[in-house]
Amino acid sequence: MAKMLPELKSSKVITRYKGGEPVLSKKDIPYEAECIFNAGVAKYRGRYVMVFRNDYQFNGVGAFGKCVIGIAFSRDGIQWEVQDKPFLTVEDMGDPDVTRVYDPRLTVIEDRCYLCFAVDTRHGLRGGIAVTDDFQTVEVLSLTVPDNRNMVLFPERIGGKYMRLERPFPVYSRGGTDRFDIWMSASPDLKYWGESRLLMGVEDVPYANDKIGPGAPPIKTDAGWLTLFHAVDIDRTRGKNGWEARWQKRYCAGIMLLDLENPSKIIGMYKEPLIAPETGYEVEGGFRTNVIFPGGLILEEDGTVKIYYGASDTVECLATAQVEDLIRLCKAE
Image (cartoon, rainbow, N blue to C red; front, top):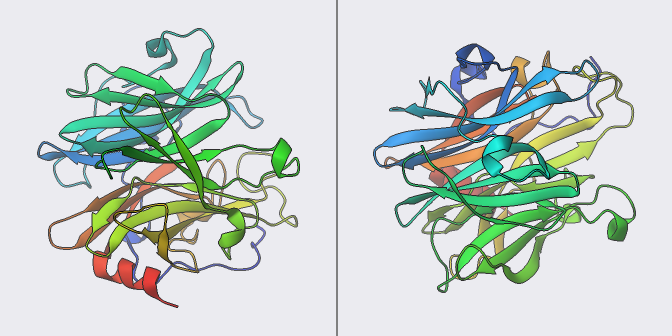
């Protein structure tokens, strides 16, 4: 397998669960499943909740015929009990224009659990927000216009407004290729969004040359909003890496710190990857190798932070760190 250049390494403050072994994969799913990844995770009413992407029915070239969002529960955030049927499907959307639903994120706000997700439609990619109180029924609150996705919500209102990070796809106005950035919007009610502004451009991340986007919903610390993002670089010398004929991209997890009262202000960012693809499940054998995609961030009472991430678009993994170490990385010059 071709080595990506330049070589990137994970921060030493990160500890992978069992050296990079998945906490969830297709073998754990009681219905048809192939790739289990890009999960959202939250702690809600005394237990952990994971909603995960499940791609299956691979066409042998580069895509899957089906995609649903599954759900699992856990008492410790490590051992997961997957429910016997998917949580959200295309049919649940009730919109014939929707062709796929995927990439969920979870945020608890005022004791309600909100789901951000992406949908493919016949007229473009859209980001959605839904809410559930019982994980049995889901109410879709809003969908963006095309093309936007990778949305995450802040876990509380700021200045009386809900806030979200998002990643539009401005191909035409960014030179006809990937140059995707992280934006921020505000809302009075989670339905109507505006006051949109650029938070961070791909050119601001030293190890990205292609695109960036939100990762897991931010967590609140005394130092600021601790915020994960994904960062993508391309190595044009790469050939076949994974199941596709050619896969040239690498995804890493990055971390930054946002101001508590004005989260559109970045007050610190680690200039190197927090997690780079290094272990077997991250660089070998998966659908798209060399992919780390962070979707869940849990701050425990003892200061431990659980980071849930998809590896190689194939399995869901877990890493941990201490919150003070993560803050220190962001503040380092």
